[in-house]
Length: 260
Image 1 (cartoon, rainbow, N blue to C red):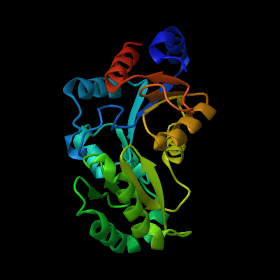
Image 2: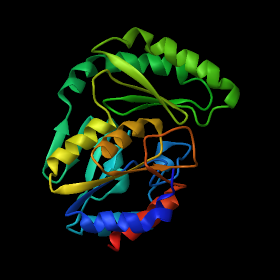
Image 3: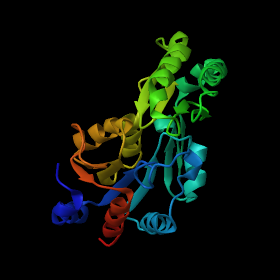
Image 4: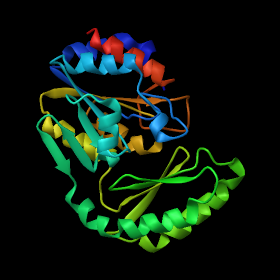
């Protein structure tokens, strides 16, 4: 998988040919390094200013597609003129956009019970905490000792098993997290497709992401002839076309894009 900056002349050609560009990125691990706790992953001022400059150019439609809640990611980036897709795209907001997946609301009736069970089974383990993101729930264990990983997974599976049914909830795994989401056919890829439909003038889509949940986004972007970029060291097969090594290289790529 080629490094994006090593094939930059071909990227410039694609940018120049596009009438408008949908420029999308994940947040944690992509625009900022993953932190021990979500609130510690603060966007640097240089990255914020770069996103702001890009959003002020007519050529670029800038958006963040995150597993965080919409209110959380919008508050931490604090740029009201860009797009935000929270909870893996179950909620989307931006200029002239206000979307909440209708099926996610009905599943929410059992969320309180699920949250209680997860907290009861997991929150007393050292280094583990449960994050309530409104439409989804996440168990974080980055601060836990490695030898606890098996017990954490076992307790998580026990707590969620009564809720895993069609029309109920489903689970996914990320970097030192277990997630519970409404069991509906929606993910980051569906959210990106929604944004592509909302902005038909954008003939080229970029998507930067670093985790397993970004693979759906990569697939949709590739199928539409866009540019999908995995952020991190070379790993198992990914649907991304290119890679960057770190959030710092993502910032460098965004700055180069802004110069076109």
